[in-house]
Length: 136
Image (cartoon, rainbow, N blue to C red; front, side, top):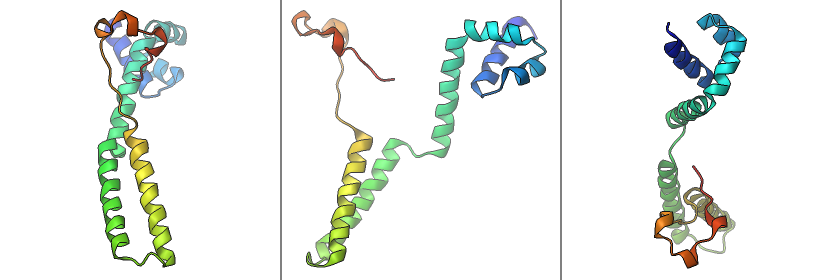
């Protein structure tokens, strides 16, 4: 393989969690060279690892929208059952607890509503440096 193709393969294997020893054997490249490449290509490796993990998460876990949808359906069922119940019974308290738990889970998944604007659109008298935090 040429050097660029070998480095690309190195990035792919590192993002999949391969050890330097295993990669050195696979690519027939020395560990010191791999360590040098690791420093040079650290952002590529991190970004590819994030993409790889996101694909695994998407494959095995429900999306937030799917979880909210399912929790909402359960909440509707619980509330429909609550409407039929006599509030003096013990199981009604358990249903209230479940309804509140489902509401908290939905709130936790959806989080607060947040809006953003490009910095150029923020009037200078409203601009505050400490409010530039963002989450990827």
